[in-house]
Length: 325
Length: 293
Image (tube, rainbow over all chains, first blue to last red; front, side, top):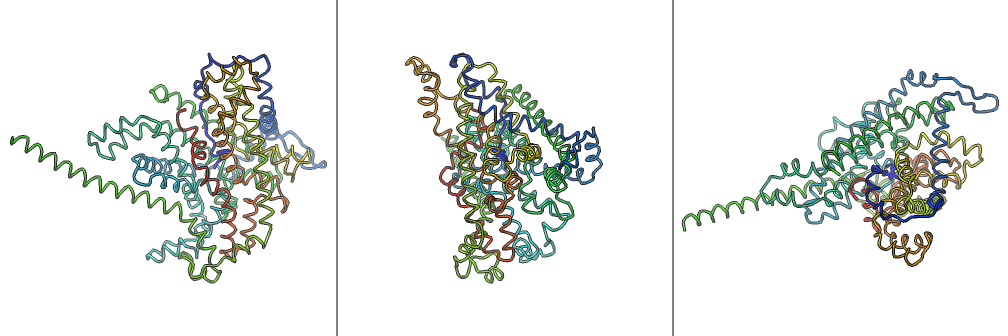
């Protein structure tokens, strides 16, 4: 879900990342228009102003806050505290648990990749009605997180439909208060995230397969190669760049885009078992009014996301060295 | 003769075996697709089936279809609260933020994709890096800034924030679409003596209508469904967006599941219709990063 992750943008969504070189190489630099001096800046100026206002200045301010005890009124002035905020959060078991919970949600990503590759490979063979299947599989991604969260909230209550279904097939033993148990709440949220984001993986992989040449899979089919062999030796290698893209987008989502799920389904409970770093920051800043502490946690989060971006860029270079584009 | 007969026989058997396998394969494939489709549709079914039940019907029969279809739940959901107000708020904020950010992104994407401009490459890399900044990180300082500027609890404040947060993604998407415009058309415009602005308005934008629709659709989905910024910056009950309102709505009607589900359905409808109408735009916008070109 991202910011205009779409991406978030989940955002967006949805929020895709493409290396700049690729986007640029698509246009032929030699045949670009030759503008008068200053004209390009004129067109880009409003966007750049927004970037400064919404990204650059806030990030600088965030870093400053992280070394301060930020005053909340004229009686409590702001004072510099050095690295005390960072010492505090790393000593705070709740922050450590929040990061751990984000890392546990990372486990959703390989599950989504495997399921999405399988479904995309099946759709690629164009069974009857494949477009309808694709539209249905993508539907959860379009539904909003509050709606999804509330509906699953009902389905997963102790007297809810999931437990009723379990009881009706004689598995009543496994009935749980899924979102109310410290043990099961986070895995249940993970399941809901997988349910919602899987369709995004399916269409990314499907679009990639449709854009590459069919001759390999055709040749393999004529050779009589079995389905699993074709999947492993032909389909999966073609999907490597798309898998890398999807995995990194989803890893970033699991770190920085799960607030809405937690806010709607558990509010961090029961007993803080589902607190994630976003929710920790939200609570510190907007409930406990310790802005400096929240800012320090924000800087740590930003650091982890940057590491993922660097990993993605390196991966991209490696892949292009092996002939992937 | 004999050898060819044997060959024919072997061939026929192989065809038969392949056919049998492909039949089993087709059934298997459809079984997998049907299973996952059922899982994807189940919550939607639950919403619709529950919204059409009375509360007592729901208590006896959670999963099945309703015994008697009722529509009164929709009336209670819409009339019993601020739903209409929240719906208007969401429509207004979404429309404003999407229009402003699409217009600004198109203007910025024009020199970034089609003009010879040294710093452009560097700026594009910057925009791409900004796409992954977690919103919560920006919200801490933005809250202080908005508070100092007395812009908390205003539509203007959230519209500016949504516009800014969407701009890197929208600009990037439009850069990659604009780059595919044939150069010969731009050169023809230049030969005719068209200025850069005229070329933008008369050539680039008309050729990019599908791309612009894609950007609008993806952005609208994002703003409509956004929760965090709406929670933090719009704290008055009358200003809430639909998605934040829904969480209040749920606690208000906690015990009356059918009414809550009716409310959820009403809230889902606009995006659902947009999805049905513009599916290919969704798919194109959201897969733009994962596919070459």
